[in-house]
Image (tube, rainbow, N blue to C red):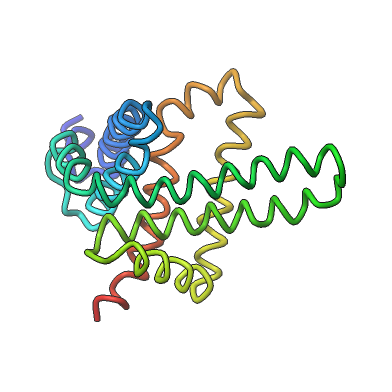
Amino acid sequence: MKWFFDMDNPVMKTLSLAADLIVLNLLALVCALPVVTAGASLTALFDQCIRIVRMEEGAIVRGFLRAFRANFKKATLLWLLFLAAGLLLWLDLLAAEATIPAMRVGILALALIWLAALHYAFGLLARYENSLRGTLKNAFMLMVACFPRTLGMLLFTVALWLLGVTFYRVGAPLLLMFGLSLPCWFASYVLNGIFPRLES
């Protein structure tokens, strides 16, 4: 039993990670409720997930709130750009369903590009000081240059949410606990393999 409660035990490490992700997910949801603050919430979530992946973790709640405040202005402006683009895609999808259904494929492809760019942009913003233009430029460049990793992030996020929505009785509680934090943690793991190249 002593082995089981050892924090170096893989089981305890997994349980500790799960607990951290649940706390971060609830924090991110609460801080994103006004919608306009969702960008700062996502940036803070990426900040903490990257720290977990890099084993730089400290106090989860304090670290999240610190990152939320530190990046609020820039993250909000970045989020408003993504929000406007997302709403435009949503309106285009509704219009396509009423007029030319075949156009939905192209719009869904653009939505996946939007989601991939969001992963990179907020991950970069959480880790590096840069202008919004520079952050977006780097996000799109990395999205293309690291296409296999980009595809992996997209598949993980989309699969998680599709499973959660399809099997909603089991999936809804899981999404409430891990819907944002688990994709963000997985993306942070992927991005951690990319960022050292930028730093060097």
